[in-house]
Image (cartoon, one colour):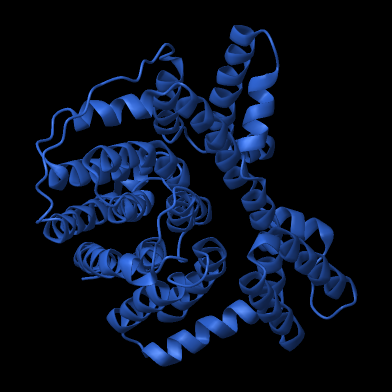
Length: 435
């Protein structure tokens, strides 16, 4: 167990130190785990390692990225934002509306993609009013991170939970006769919106915005809607008994997303009479995240085979005692604290089997702990400027536009926003699932 734990710890240290090399570090660590398995340090083979990879998750992420690329190119997000701005009276309501819009979109679209959709509108409004765009874009960034936990396709962490816990699209809304994680996340979003309104209460300059963006292709919008609808439909498919069909059933969500991505890309290629849409989608695809996840699935299988997961679960269990509430609070607090400084994707991928192990030791249903983990890890990234990719992207956009962004600028919005959303979301989740 100790050698596998050492490799795992070194992997995390290297990923924190060399963030641009994270995918390659994860893949190298996966290779080391395989070598250790074949040397007899613990039991793991190439076949068991490849079986541990969640291909449904990888398919969902890659296909959704393609659909989002087409959606952004259609200019529909920019037009929707402009339509919203034309209805608000001042900066306070403009920031609130933009943040709300970013939050709603991010429940179905990648957080960074959401930021890239909405940020140009925030910049344009700030320039027209001659105000600093720094707090405006920070508000949009933290809002785009907020609702990733609400649906199956909202964030990579949600997709990881869906694959691990075998949750379909509808079960993020309603699970076993109870309100699922969507509702606590939305209540946390509403509470954090009040925080934004308080922080921007003095920004009462009037806003004038014309609807200038023209959308000449509505098909990508229907493609987005169709993808969500198909994910809902396939969630009602009965589980087959045939082994071959069972494999396809396990990848039904990913295959659904791939189907719509292929339809969209083929149509775009016919319209342009070239294969450039495929090339653009490939360029825009976050291959680093896909490679990172592929490697991490194997690394986590290695530490599971070596008994590390069970040991970490036992440590949490001893710390919390036999009190589910203490354990729940511990998971939420630790998740918020760690996600403020490290990427939540490898953290959630690592902690999901740990949480299941702890629940097994307690003889408890792991659902409330899964939800606490997801809320803490997804929202905790908003606590610092480096806690989430959307935050880093927003700061990069501001700096490219000649703006100076300090850590204090971010913390002034990020800290109250995050703590409010986490407190409300975690409390409601416990009241529904833990009591």
